Amino acid sequence: MTAGELSEHFPVSKPTMSAHFNVLREADLVDAYKQGTTITYRLKLSVLEDALLGFARTFGFGSLHNSAEADPVSAPRKEPTR
Amino acid sequence: MIVKPLGFALGLAAVFLAVAAGLRFAAAEGMVADDIVRRAVQALIGLGLAAWANFMPKQLGRPRKSAGAETRSQAALRVAGWSMTLAGLAYAGFWAFAPLPFADTVSMVPVAVAMVLTLGYAIWCFAACRRGAPAGN
Figure 1 (cartoon, one colour):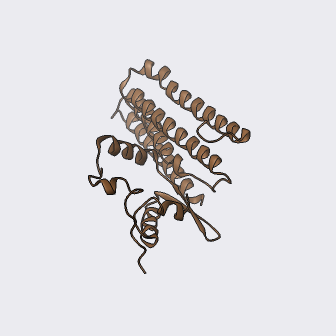
Figure 2 (tube, chains in turn cyan, purple):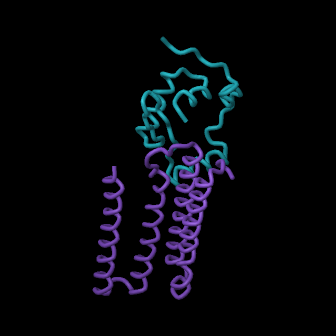
Figure 3 (cartoon, helix red, strand yellow):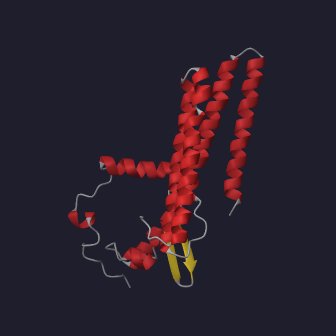
């Protein structure tokens, strides 16, 4: 997905998303491919990371209690900082 | 680009050779039994396979032209990574805990199944891309 498409699904500004992407890229958890002005991000998980994510989801570690946080698409979107 | 996985593979091979040589030396000196050496080396090979396959889904390469081809490519890598990792762990488990004659015969079964699954799924994904079928079918 492109950075723009991804940011539509989260209630944070695009610069904030960009900072998060940089952290994920440095952790080697996402792959960023730049083509012109578009950056496409791809999830990049090892088997162990994938298994830990599945384990965390199954047992509810890191689950969000706030319904607005749990459903970022329907949550109100924060305006970009200027 | 290729230096990192190559370095990892060479490091893994160096660990295998060093451990095998060390155990062989220990067996020659009478410090460990021959069957322990065999078990340890084979279990190490299984763990090495699991460690190497663990990183397979991270080798994404260049993005594909269509979203469908990209989805299938990543799915094939994940299936390959998961199946070979589990096969490596099963191989190591058989050699570590099963009786030797049993481990000798049965340990290759999970690896063979994983290889067939990996190749079969990759071929199926490639054929689906050629047909132009939407991802998920």
